[in-house]
Image 1 (cartoon, helix red, strand yellow):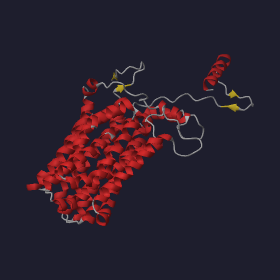
Image 2: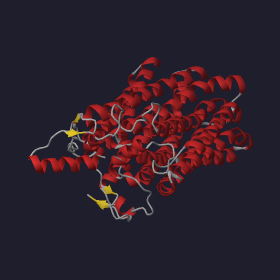
Image 3: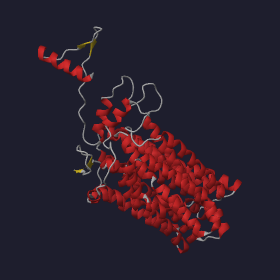
Image 4: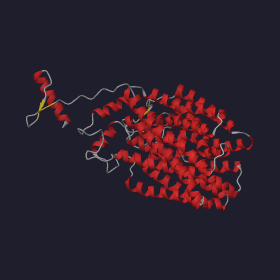
Length: 496
């Protein structure tokens, strides 16, 4: 219809030298169709403006279902959010259960650090592999496999612990294998489903699921452990993941093109502003690894995760040993930083999309601003911990630290889809491999340091890495797309 209107308008212009309003069959004058809005700036901002300007359903927001209800891309984002809630519920329950388990099995600090870090052995193995599988096979299959696998391993944890230390380490590593594919698979899914102008908000919302999972796990675990024993948290949390897997199997989809529930209007809206439309049959490893912008992501992911994983796994122990909190107090106060992260993450994502990118600030500048807050805020707060006297002051600093850390979801964690949307899964797998190495080394190093050292030494290392990451990120990162999906359909990326 639109093409017919433009043809009619052209004919009218030839006859009269100007463009007249169209006359429909009922005689009512209709305004001529608007020309597409020119792209403003570069990167996501221009694409988002054009997409929003050209939606096809009058009175309906871009890509939204005409009859109301949640759009399919929102449903997919919601599924990913819940998967990440379960991901961190299953990860943090051990940090609470560690206290009674250490008493029952006689573990010292080094053994606790070994048990905590064993998760990352498996997690490390499937980062790049999960990205490759997701980019080739689709995010639905890989994410579904990951959730089912780690949920089974979670449920088996107390059985393995009672069998001995070695079986427990194997079980936790197996759990890491399942969780290792989650982030690459999610990144691939969202690169296919979420338009550029919604990227920061969508990613921030999904990643906030990890914070909500930490809140939920840290809140429920003390009650379940005191009422039913430490085994209960693993059995109950693992069962929830299996229920999610059944729902995802029946309703999830890897791309809008494969989905039978998405409307034609929403599919068109997504395709108009989503570069990655097909799966990658080959990964350009050399091209990816030759770019300094890729290495900036990898290095900064390491710097970020060192501090984040220390707090994720050791915060309840810090509260108990240094601040003198009991099991319930440790669980309660461990929740507060994650609540602040969930709020700050979504607020930062909204701010990045609407107040920065949406108002013409370049994607590159936006990512640098957000990640600088994500690095410098925790660096300042952790450096002040040794100077406070009261437990409440220490908790307050950790809350502010994690709130600033959440800005990273609109910085570092959004950057994979910015520079390489078609290879977003494998690129996240590459960078998160470095992040997992930081988790393995940092988590174990804390246990070793605390044998004869102090928490001041632990936090000093994290602060140094935050500062180093700030320099690397601002010198070498970019928000511009570096790898294109070419028009010929081969797998050779066009480099910028």
